[in-house]
Length: 244
Length: 79
Image (cartoon, rainbow over all chains, first blue to last red; front, side, top):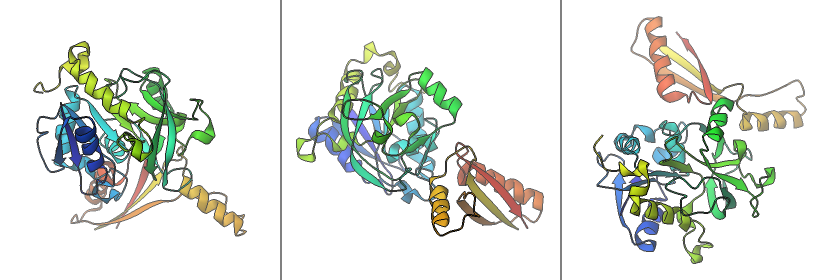
């Protein structure tokens, strides 16, 4: 299986994601420069963390105009699995591939720490190997991860079960103290209605090795690798690679 | 012509930076400042020579790039 890791000027978690896919999970992995106009046969696309285009104006605001994003949108439209991590999540929001927007953390600080998130949905390609309610300990590192959407959008996200991860305490209980950035409904991750596009603020690629302090991020990679391997069971993923 | 674009968070969206600025002003004794909303200000130098066209172009740029309509609104002045 081939991972495509998009590299924008200012991406800084691209090598971490590439390393996880290739060296830890033994998968094929390719970097996709933001000016590229094809996905080099990627079966799954990762928009990594960082500060794409310097995050000038707003986080992720400029990246959506990069040529590669047209291909990523077409791939998503065909049902291809797309994961946006941190800045990648912000880019998916600005590109309109996911609903909502990010505000400054309510602390107004850049927060770099391990947090706990509860898996709310396991029928996405990036959480299918997790147990419902499983609590993952994964690091965050962001200044603008305070997820916001208007109340009607939040209601729709909840009704459609599009909230994939929520910030909780280590026992999986939702409380204000465990919400690191003030996100509405403690949202750490959402998916689109079709469930093949997922954005998440925590960094699973930084939590795949004991040496780095934890391996709870592995389940995200395990999920998409096994989801694609058993493609025929998953109608949304059957269409991967089919021309638009 | 010149267009000035003021982008601010919508009234319904909590503004953490504005809140901190308001708190700071209150701690300095400026109790007469009830609330603060902060935002961004852009000056656009435009080739347009007519106010209507200038405003339309500025609005298009604001819609597409300068503001995120999910959380922000904007106001335009041209001269």
